[in-house]
Image: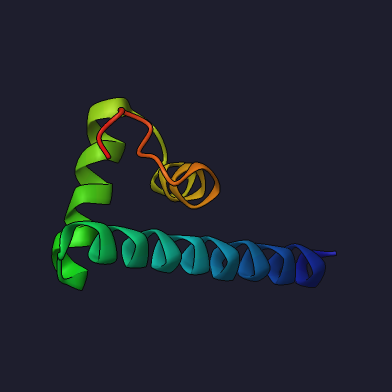
Length: 71
């Protein structure tokens, strides 16, 4: 049972990492940011909205809009 939970956690981590990478790419293209700047923007938005970073990334990838309304 513990192995199954470990595998599920790894799948979730990989999916979150992919979403964050996609969100960074959107921000890099849209604003001409480098990777570190795009990640910093995601982190700042996560902190100011008190929302998990992966949720911010998912919202951006799905809607093409930042949750705080900045585009």
